[in-house]
Image 1 (cartoon, rainbow, N blue to C red):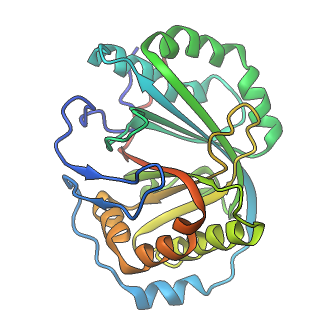
Image 2 (cartoon, rainbow, N blue to C red):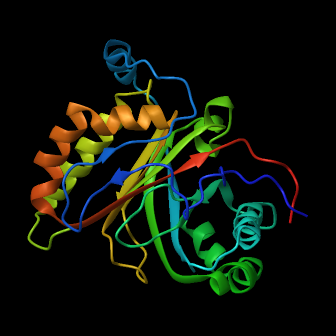
Length: 281
């Protein structure tokens, strides 16, 4: 059976309706133009700053990212089948507390076409996931035959210690835009340079709840995939909210001062989030 997957499949990578200018291998600041589906988001910096000052108890979580390079001859039916199987794998395995998957909406130099995001409570759960026979079967039968490349990134982060933020449940998680940022810091970047950059990103994203539902970031600990040293995942409330953030002076200033002088490579991607169905593959 086929279900309505978690992410919008209407944005086909073969017929992208918008232009996107992103980072190069060393790259500057993003400038995007999007086809928007959601109402305009009002930016209210005063309320955001007040909200961000409230102290909240946090809990550690483990984030898993998988980026795919689909073959050019991938059909719509094969694409839908692949994403459905990836999404519904959460119902067949323990340990997955949140998941999103969809078609990447950016043209990017690395030619990534689809993204998979998963959250686990512990590193042990992630280790079991990598070895799970069911998921290995999904990859072998429904993913790798239709892809010519794949990268995995894993990192540990913290979220508010409450059931909705941990499991990414509730109305505000049903819609929006999943934004993925991967970064490789240069070898001559000091530990302080790296920490200051990641801390500045975390501080900025946490200060804008009118635009951002949740943001996590951390150091990549996947020993089999070291192309990128750090990663971040930001759930924006809408594509408009993401556009406001990316075009904002605060983000541009932070990127130029904290990231650009110290990185070798970076890539940023995004995909839409829509309500999901309930059928299991």
